[in-house]
Image (cartoon, rainbow, N blue to C red; front, side, top):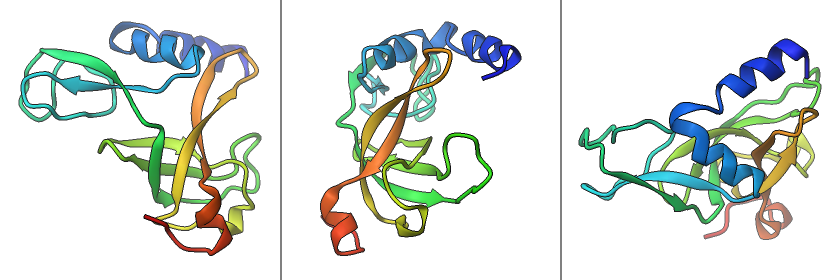
Length: 141
């Protein structure tokens, strides 16, 4: 990671997302939940995008989800399969799929969080397929 990219990443770990980045450094995935309407959401912000309440808390996410969308990038330096993953709790995260041949990834595939450490020490959530969804090539419920 270049010094410029590392500086930008450091700036993005302040403010409303500080607890999120701290949890990731401990290899835990947390998401905001509105205490007024009960909705979970992502990206971190100081108010609920559903009811506009500022009564929010961080809750542990199961780390399980489904591939909503993806692409492949043979030229990417690290993450070859950028993806959108919808967590079982509801929010959709921009992430990457790891631990599988890119040609084997499919929409609807069940995945679970694993954590990748970048060159600057930043921990980010990436996802790997649940074994059963790789074995038969289709989603498992």
